[in-house]
Amino acid sequence: MTLRKGSRGHELAGEVFVVSMLAMSGAGTILALMKDQVNNICGGVMTLYMVTTAWLTARRHAERPGLLDWGAMLFAATVGIAMYTLGARVAMGLSGANGVPLPMYFIMGSIALLAAAGDLRMLPLLIFWLIRVRFHGGLQKKRLPAAQAVSAVRV
Image (tube, rainbow, N blue to C red):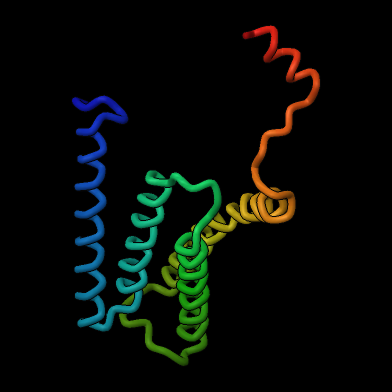
């Protein structure tokens, strides 16, 4: 509230927030690993994923998704599928629930799969880049005759 959006102070506050969230979720994930709490492990790694991808989105300067973007999408999909699989195993009695309610496995899996689906929205952007840049020789702007007439009038 005291910093103007886009100012250097606002950017610095955002970076401090991201670093603190990454440290908190990383520490929580490590503690969950030590206590063998599967749901907390998944919650911690999903928090790492969401904070990292939000930071990447805010810092994005590229026109097309990078390898890290696609890796993050696959990571979220993998966590979602793993949570659904674990939930199914608990429902069938093949694995212990460790005190976690059965619906929580499916809720966490759904959140992860929804996040992966949100990242999948980048696919049309990648297809556009492949067609435009790779097959048509670049991103040159081709003006239509009407557009040239309008720009000539403005000059």
